[in-house]
Structure formats: structure tokens, C-alpha cells
Image 1 (cartoon, rainbow, N blue to C red):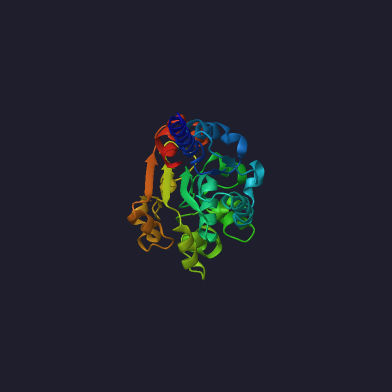
Image 2: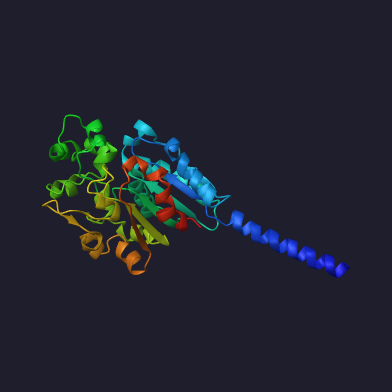
Length: 292
């Protein structure tokens, strides 16, 4: 009888341990929102994650929401870093970051500048990772008196660099001015050499997986291939990621990640920019499997 009880206790303990792994084994997910939005836009996505992986701690960082999201990106990065650090330090097994639109560019900066971060997977959801050059409704909202071809005049100066979108506005017809006056994206891409390049590269390569998600019907990210690290040449022909100079020179570790087999690309047609985070097909096809 005693032996039977001991076997039953052992079996029950094993079941509890297995249940614990299933419930508590998922890494925390940190969501970084984009331009002109905030946590409320990510409630559906958070629900998808919790339903697919019960017990997952999901946090959408609640700073620089809505209109405040136009603040200079280096200022935002500093405050997002503090929020990220408070979650990471409690997660011994690491965290995943899911970063939407402008948030993906912010996350690039975070992962480059935080030494010893424990981010496992970086999911960039429809983000202008290689820059932005498009006449979108967001641009009209910020610069109602400028055409796409003249926005560089507003962006490529000290005042313009105080507006978030100018920090990744990349006019393919004015690259010398972009490199001279933009002090954000060219630094991340290693197109403007600086003393921290190697350290930033080392930090970025701490991630185990990079997931790039975008699609041709986005309507905001321009070119849409920027979400996959592609961008225009001077004739506005799209140059895909592996033909970009920053990739070929492996300036910030992107080629190394790719050579490791740790870059995953997911392209979805028919998805508008503001629908990426609420589209269940996008979640199930491109996101869910990486959040374990």
C-alpha cells in the first residue's frame, strides 16, 4: 500500500512539474508600439499570445503613446531602455521583444546599445528597419506643407532631428545630406562610423532569432521591403537586404545572423499597416511559433 502511495505521489509530482513547464515555461513578451499608437492598439495581439501560450507575461510598454511618439528617438530609446531593463532582470531565461512600425527601429537601437541584454527573439512587425521614404498619411500629419521629395529640408537639420520620423527618413536622392545630418539610423546601420560600432554589433548579435514581417499592401512603410531590410537605390528601385551595403559589410551583424540561419522572413499580402497586430493569420503564421 505504501509503495503504491509513493508511486502515486511521484506520478502526481511529475505531472505538476510538467504542468509547470507548460504554464510557466514561456518567456515574457515585451511589445514596443509604433508611431501614433500605444498599449490599447495591442490588446488583441496580447490576447492572441496569452491564448496560444497560457501563462505568458505580456507587457506593452506604456510610454511615448500617441502624439508623444514623435519625440526624438534617442530620447525615447533611453526611457524604453529603463522599462525593458526592469522586465529583463526578472526573466532568467530571457525575453522576446515584438516591435511594431517605429517601435522596430527603437528596438534596433535598444538591442544595439544594451550590453548583456537577454532578448532571445526580436520580432519586427511591419517596421521601417532600413528607412522610410513615402508620401503617407502619417507624413501629411507631421509635415502638411511638404511633399515627399522636399521633406529632407525639414528633417536634415538639428531641429528636424527632434522629430521621430526624421530619425529614419532616408531620402535616396539626398544620401550625403542624410549621412551628414541624421544621427540615428545611419549610426545603427554603421553607415556613419563611430567608436561604439563593434560594441553595438556585439550587443545586437546576442539575439538568437530575428523575425522580419511585412507585406506589399501595407500602405505606410515605404518601400514596404524596408520591413525586410530592403530599400530604394537612387532611382527608387528596391535593393533587397542581401544586396545592401550594410549587409554585405556586416556592419551591425545582420549578415552574421543570416549566415547562422537565424533570420526568418514572413511576407503577408492583403494586410494594411494598422491591421498587422490584430490579424490572426499574421499571428498564427508569422509570430506564434517564435514565442516559446
